[in-house]
Image 1 (cartoon, one colour):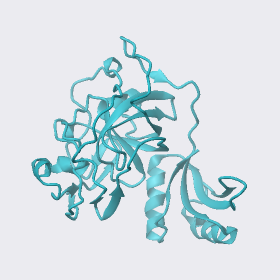
Image 2 (image 1 turned 60 degrees about the vertical axis):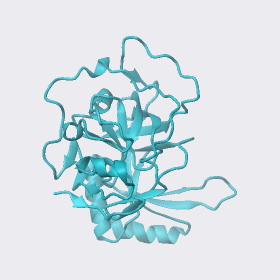
Image 3 (image 1 turned 90 degrees about the vertical axis):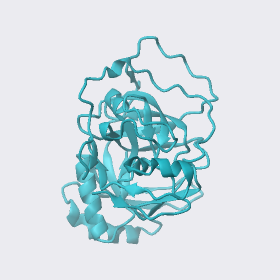
Length: 294
């Protein structure tokens, strides 16, 4: 069953809004929101009915979203909002945003329901949900495993499952080749709609990035200015996955700054292993663990 998030004057209509607060949220910004049990491969886990459409979709015929200058959504961009006891701060600007992480997707259960932007969710349109990017933001999403690339419009909030970066519409996930596994390793880059973009071909095709990465997957469990502290944490978490290995990497932004020692577990074979390790780390009291893709 879905869990109900605490109401707040700063709550924002979000992916949880799809669960039933759409009308109220259009009239008052302080409406309650609901938090689904979790989001995982292929859609929501813990709730029935989500998944791909029953009718085959010709994803190759769907054009990328076309970036254009739009006003910020009046409902989707509060200073912050809370879901499931966690506070999310909406970014003032998407300029320069680049991040790597795990993408998931959502489908039939929310098709036609209102998104955080006020637009109805269309699983066959090139859209996405993101917890903190301004709404709307246009982003380029690259599948780091196969080099496929798409452009989508962020018009919704989510995903709220730990370790997930972005939630794609079904057709966007299909074009990237991640619907079968349910998740994918991606790079997300914000697009400046004021910058000129090359016109799309009349016949849509999957765009491939010329150079793409092997996308090694790690969980970073801590970062320290003192190497001794990094060593102690490394020893503490070694038992969680001795085969994956614990690595301490040293790096600094530039020579003027002292080095930072980062403790990482990996490379890991799957998103499922990432989720398993994260749960165990949380049980150990290591709450800052997060996904790193090299």
